[in-house]
Length: 142
Image 1 (tube, rainbow, N blue to C red):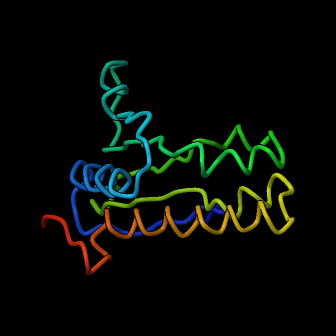
Image 2 (cartoon, rainbow, N blue to C red):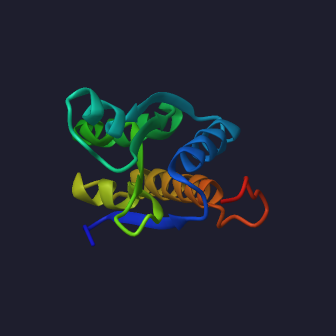
């Protein structure tokens, strides 16, 4: 496991998981900046890659307080989540924990720490909903 990287297995196929994630992010008032299909890019390059998609998302109210404390965290913002299919055909959703990002950039004071904690809870809720682990908002089926 990579330090600070959190992953959850999804009950859904990769494309559906990503669609669910986009919906979960939008429901919480976050903007989607980019949906990048790494597998499609690989095909264009004549290469093969299992389904792998990246979502870049966020909002200024969440990230700006962290950048005000230390602008270097801007290299890790906006937030990103990866959806991929492993060799056993299981779908996963993973992301760098905003708390780990804050620690990585030395944001240990109470205000940036609280902002990172709030972002961490927000991203986790989105990922759990997208993967089908949030029983209150199930999406689709395999």
